[in-house]
Structures are given as structure tokens and as C-alpha cells.
Length: 260
Ligand code: ACM
Image (cartoon, rainbow, N blue to C red; front, side, top):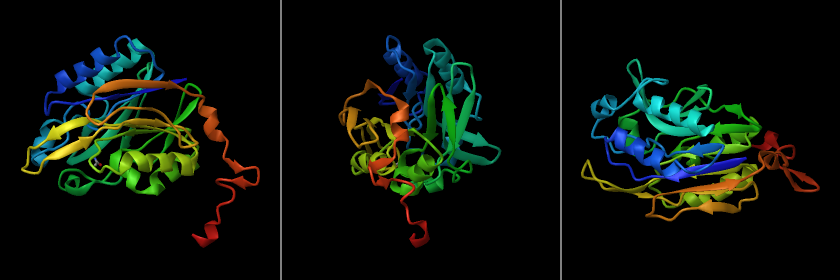
């Protein structure tokens, strides 16, 4: 199975242009799963909740969903992307997984970062795992990385590949994801963005360094901190089912949960 990501540099609010950047970049690429960054089509730094609401869609509708659904069908691939989700009076920082038949799975960011708390509601979906082709997939979004429980929960649910749309601003995350992969013996795909946003008098520089990491904590593919680009790697998802750390240590069965 070929897993891939695209590291973008969106122009704030230019949804059509930002979607087009991705479609053009992956036009001649081949993959089974493509992970795109958090809020990949809108940009990240909203002046306030009303501005964010004006760029939000209901889950399963809107131009971003329609275009990604078309792309997933064209490429015969699962595409996971971050978007602004409105639901009644609530606003979530969400990720959608869309398969080539149009089936979709929605995850809402559990751990909001810094001033995101002024804009979004905390996610309500919780962590879950779904099947795509021969793989078991879990999703978490950006700052969820800072809580080891996020990846651990997904791994305990049977995730083989953790897809991680991100807009990273803390430089420690790319290396921390090596630990998340290793401590759970899963593949991780962190799809980040690059560039700068300065819309509220507080410049945010996004770190890039998108990475695909193996269950042994090996970096299988990565990008730099200023470039946009596509990377992909061939994996066998069942490699993540082997939780033997040594012949005498099983990563999960040896946990002493009575002491935690
Ligand atoms: C982040 O959670 N986007 C830093």
C-alpha cells in the first residue's frame, strides 16, 4: 500500500486556489492514501469566530468536500484533510476521510491549541478506527500529538496507520512523532504546512517537516521546513500488528495498568 502526504502553503481564505494547488500537485502521482494538512484549504489564523464561521462548511457538504470527493474517485484513493466544520452553533477543527466510493469518516480535534480555544468547540467525536482496503486507519489533528493518550488510544483500538493533519508551530512535534510511532508501534503520517500567517498581530510560522514514520520509529520520508511538496512510501500496514518489542516483551500485553 502506498501512503502519501502533501505539504502545502495555503493563501488565507483562498479556498479554491488552495484546493487547486493540491489537485495540480498530485495529478501525476499514484497513492492509496493521501493525507493533507489541518485546515488545508482555508488557512489557520482566524481573526475571530465569525470570520472562521464564514469559511466553514457542514460536514459532507461544501466545495472542499465536493472537490476532495472527486479527487478521491479520480485517484482511487482515500484522502484525509483538515477543514473548518460548522454544526448548528458549534464550530470544530475537523478532519474528514473520503474514500473513492464517497464514504466518509469525520474526526473533530480533541485537544485545542492556545487561542484555538477562542474559535473552536472541543471535538466531540473522540478517537476511532476505520478500515480502508487492507489497513486500519486512525486520525488525530496537530496538537493532539502533545497528549500521548491520543495515539495510544488509536493504537489500542487497532490503528495501523495514524493520519495526522497538522499546522505545526511548535518545533518539537516532528521529533515527538518518532516517539508516538515507536511507543505504539504504528505508522504515522504527519502532513504539515509551511509559510507564515500574521493576521492578528501575532505572527505564526509553520514548521513544515512533514514526516512518514515506521512502527520502529524510522523516518521513511520527510520534507523540509520551507518547501511545499508531495512524498510517498510503500508500506505493509500489518507490520504495525507486531507488538513484540523483544521475544519477551509485548508492547500492550505487558502494560501494568493497575499501576498507571
Ligand atoms: C496546532 O494544533 N495547529 C498547533
